[in-house]
Length: 115
Image 1 (tube, rainbow, N blue to C red):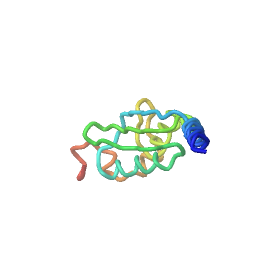
Image 2 (image 1 turned 30 degrees about the vertical axis):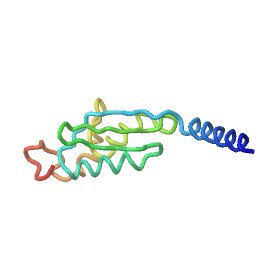
Image 3 (image 1 turned 180 degrees about the horizontal axis):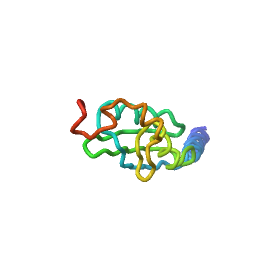
Image 4 (image 1 turned 180 degrees about the vertical axis):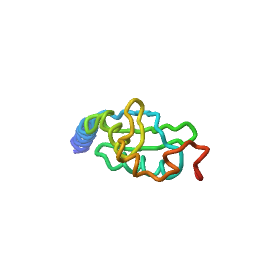
């Protein structure tokens, strides 16, 4: 009986790991300059399917995302950042979304009131 339970648990773990798919980490250069930018970008990415974590580092203007590659692609993540009004590597910010950002988020770190 103990062997059957052990085998069942092992099979359950194997199926769970297989179903989850591989996890990837993506780091993007963004145009984020302040705390508001950080919140907007992280929120936009975290609502996507397959996202485990999304963290903006304002010191170097990067976004690091841990995601399940079976559920979402790197291009989809870049598009979400663009649609939030920010650049993501080679993908430019969506012009309409960029225009809707507060003035602080359109400038450089020097013109921004918060970090």
